Image (cartoon, rainbow, N blue to C red; front, side, top):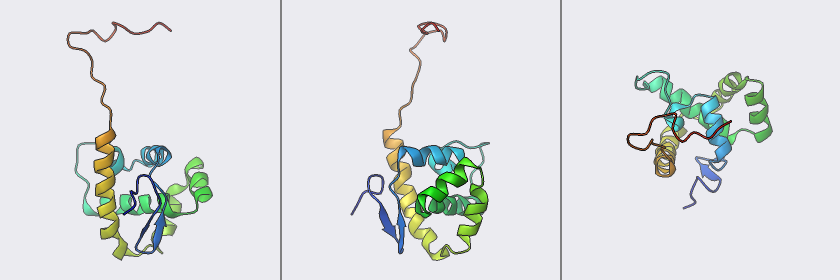
Amino acid sequence: MEDYLDEPKLIGGVMFRAFTAGTRKACFQMKLSIFTGVKDDNTVLNEEELENQVIAFAWLQSAPFQDVKKALATNTWKNAVLDFSFSFPISLIPQLMLEVSRIQKAIEAVAVEVVPKPNEKPEENVPPN
C-alpha cells in the first residue's frame, strides 16, 4: 500500500495528490482543524463541520492543482469547494475519513514542539535584531 503522505493515492476512484508541506499550509489557510489541530475555540467539531472539512480537503487534494492555487490565492476556495461538493460522492466520506485518521497520526508523529528551558525568562537568549 502506498503511503499517502509520500505518493498520490486512489480512493474510491478519485486520485488524491500526496500530502505535502504545501497541503499543510493550505489546511491552515482554510482552517481545516482536523489537519492543523488549531480551532477557533475549544469545541469539538460536529458531524456537519467534520464533513465540510473532509470535503474541503478532498477538493484541495483532487481538484486540478492550478485551480486550487488560484482559488486559494484569490480566497474563492469556499465557492470552489461548494461547487466540488455537488459532484463529490457522499459514499467516499467514510473511506476518506480513514485516510484523514492516518494523516493525523502521521502529522502528530513528526510534529515538533518547542518548549522553553526550565527557569528561563522569555527575554533571555533571544538573538539581537
